[in-house]
Image (cartoon, rainbow, N blue to C red; front, side, top):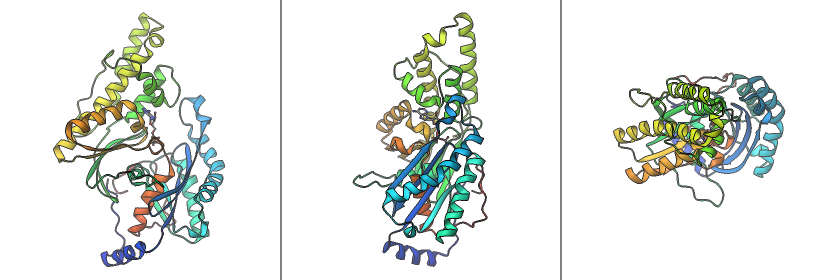
Length: 363
Ligand code: KG4
C-alpha cells in the first residue's frame, strides 16, 4: 500500500507551500473508526485541542458490538466536535479544512464520522481531506504540543504499527509516502492478546490487563509455538491456538490452573508476542540499514514491547520514537495531523468518496 497522492503540479505546490508559510493553517480532525468518537484541532502542526468520548457500553460483551458503536457515535459526534472547537479557542470559521478517518475500521462507525465531516465541510465551505487511519497512527509522531519539545523521526524511518486490527512494518519515506514492507497474514498482535485474555476470563480489552498482570509474572514460565514466516510478515494465529491448547490441557488436570498462574500466563503470552514483533523489526532495520525506528498503535502502549524496543535501541544504536500513551489509542489529533500534511500537498477529496472497512493497495 502507498499513500502517495499528487493532484497538483510541482510549481503549483511550491506556490501553495510559500503561501502556507505566511499563514496559520487550521485543521479539524474527526475520528470514528471503532469505538472512540474523537475530534481535534491542529494549527500548523500544533495541537490546540483533542477531545475523545470512549464508549464503555461494549465492556460487558467482551468486544466491540458494531451496531452499538454506530449508535454511540451518533450521540457523541456533535458534542465532541463542539467541545474540540470550543477548547481550541478558535472560531469555527477559521477552520481551513476538515480531515476525517475514511478507513479502515467498522463501516457503521466510519459512516457517522464521514457523513458528519461532509456535512460540516459543506456548511463551512471548506475542503475535505480523507485520512487513512493507519497513516494517522504513524503521523501522530509529528504532533507538537504547547510548551513541549517532542523529537520527531527523520525520514526514512521504520514504524512498527501494532493495533487490534493490524500488525505491520511500514517504511515511511515522507509524510505522504509510506510503504508496508511486512504485515500479518492472519491475526493482529492486539487481536491475539485480546483473545488469550478472553480465554483466561479477563475483561475487554485484554491488552492493558495482560500488560498489568505480566509485570508480576515470569515471562519464561510457559513456551508457546512461534511462527516461521518468510520476510517481514507476521502470523499470530498459531500462537493463539497454542495458548488455547496449553490451557485446555492444564485446566483438565487442575480446574484452578488459570487463576493460580494468571501472572505467569500473562507474562509468557506477552513475551511471545513481543519476541515475534521484535524479531522482524530488527531484521528489517538491519536489512534496510535504518536506525530511525518508531512504534505506533494501541499495542505500542505495552510496557513489555516498550522495554524490548529500548533494549534493542541501546544495542543497535537506534533513534527510538515511542508515542505518548494518549496517542497510542484512537484519537483525532493524529487524524488532524495527517490531514495537515495532506493539506500542504492540496490532497483534498471529493464529497462523494465513501468510507472503506479494509485496507487495499490503492489507498
Ligand atoms: O490502535 P487501537 O486502539 O485500535 C485499533 O485496533 O485500531 O488498538 C487496540 C488494541 C487492543 O487489542 C488492545 O488490547 C491493545 O491495543 N492494547 C494493548 C495495550 N493497550 C492497548 N495491548 C497490550 N498492552 C497494552 N498496554
